[in-house]
Image (cartoon, rainbow, N blue to C red; front, side, top):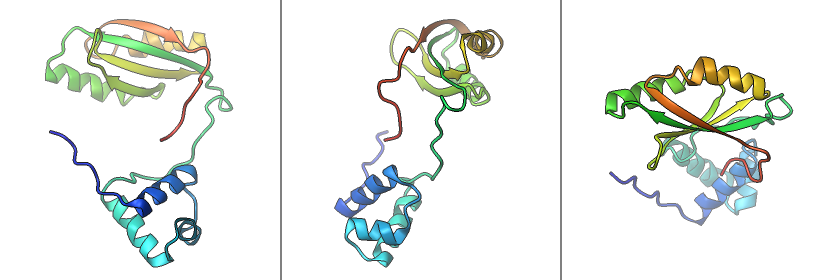
Length: 154
């Protein structure tokens, strides 16, 4: 089933662009920047939230300044790819805080994980004690990132 494409006009698009840059922008300033008055801007913002296009607001943290500079990408192959096994793996991944992203992949392996830790020793521990013990994991391959060329929100 294909997700319907939202019907966004230029004002909606402008709201999303402005909030993606600064999610703490006051509505009055947002309205001024997009060229509408406050009330229609608030109504559009509420609709974008209710429609699930805007899913929330949060602070963007600098992981390197937080001591989490080691990034590894992990290919995961499962021993079982029936729906129950996939769901078990998916649920378990949610409980591993070091997994920053998890994507099911169509290809030579089943999942691609982005794992962020303080250093290689911490990663080794996470791999041995958490990732390798996730449900139905048959094998993994790790690729350590040397530099992030582009990262960030939409």
